[in-house]
Amino acid sequence: MLSRYILPQAAVVDPDLTLSMPPKVTAASGLDALIHACESYTSLGATPLTEVFSLRAVELIAGAIRAAVWRGSDRKARADISLGSYLAGVAIANAGTTAVHALAYPLGGKYRIPHGVSNALMFPYVMEWNIPADMEKFARLAQAVREDVDGLPLREAARRFLRGIESIIEDVGVPRTLDEVGIDRGELPALVEGAARQQRLLRNNPRSLSKEDMAAIYAKAWR
Ligand SMILES: [Fe+2]
Image (cartoon, helix red, strand yellow):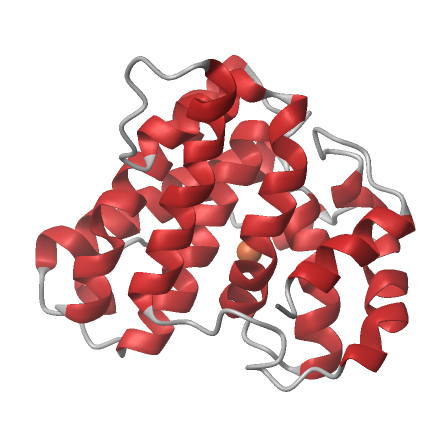
């Protein structure tokens, strides 16, 4: 259970305070916020109220993250990301995150990979696993990340979400594979054990995961 003391009673969200953030930090923290939005939207803990916050957060962050990273003085982009990260924060506080964060935690804890980068490494593969469990929601997310899904069958529309997030991850320049962040394939059993301990998050995931499933997802991230 999460302590209530980890949740702030008030937050000062001032986009001007982010203007001096370098591209790497903007990319990692912006992707973390985008992942909060996508995970809370598809969490089993989502409600009609959190879904509104999550979807708007996805739209804002997906629309602004490239500009915020590569044109850091763009105040509109900084404002959109800041509002999006706030909305996504409200959404995860109520709906929870899911298996992306569960599989990312061992990467951050043991191997000191920045939180946003570790989540981005797991993001496409966990979402690919989750898509069959809720194709309507993933098709809606595909639209929110600005993929054209008009006229597509539901399954193809849902899978367009992967194309949308992979293009964002590529464009903002974070590491794409576990090799790039120096994690040896021999670490796989330890990663799976670490992720399996995150039951608080895994029970929100729209599709259940065995340890074998987690191992298969990590294996994709070494490609
Ligand atoms: Fe996070």
